[in-house]
Length: 334
Image (cartoon, rainbow, N blue to C red):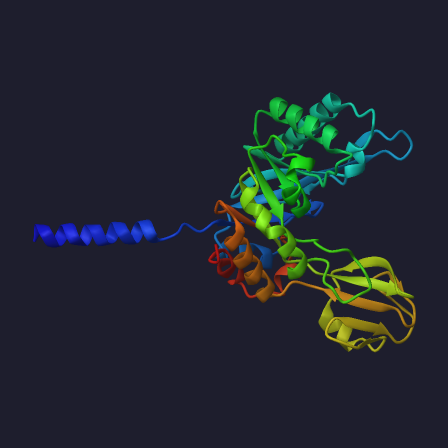
């Protein structure tokens, strides 16, 4: 009997050790008012989501003085106590390009604003995330800002990382943060051709092998949004978000000419946007198969397993395009 128990225990331990630990599912929340719709709440509940990365505000430049200012701060209309909240600050790269940027002042004001927003909405937090697509010309200011922000905030600090910053990290450098989040989207240029600028596997493949050499631990952010590229006379004149495809197909002012292109048959206004006859709309979206492929190729090329997969972004319009269990399917690929 003792031998059977021992063998049974060994089999159980081997199974437990071999069972891989999946990353958790989290979401970015990128709207200016925090209020969850019934569909958003349902998806969060079904996927046992307990962590939200909420954009608190952007930092841009005041047009006249060129001084950094907070832009579009969030307002909370709903309690967040059932979630772990990570405040996110999006910093426009032009802020970091300012030659006489007062880094100390910017760091102090940014932390103060995060604390004020959190206190007024009774939000406690242990981590802050900085989102900035810094370049070679802005890296010195950005890296100094990260250093000061981390020291002053006394919080765990994470930063978003782009593919080019992974591949060329010896030039772009690595911010002094506790962890990074690889933004695995917006890979190509927004252009009139048929390529998908949100995700293109051929472009991704040029960067993937660099992941194993990147010294900072990375979690991954995957896209669940879509947009339409508005083209006139072979030139991109804008991006149109939240275009309902089923409505577009029924609209007699538009004609679907291929899997991704719609042509404007008659000049018209739609959702406050003027579309001229012969304009084109190129639909760029992410399918469920795209998400699974992303997970597979990231898993094959990463040195360390991610602890989190963060989907961008939590919005009823985006969620309606996917099966409710797609998020669990994606994380099972890691």
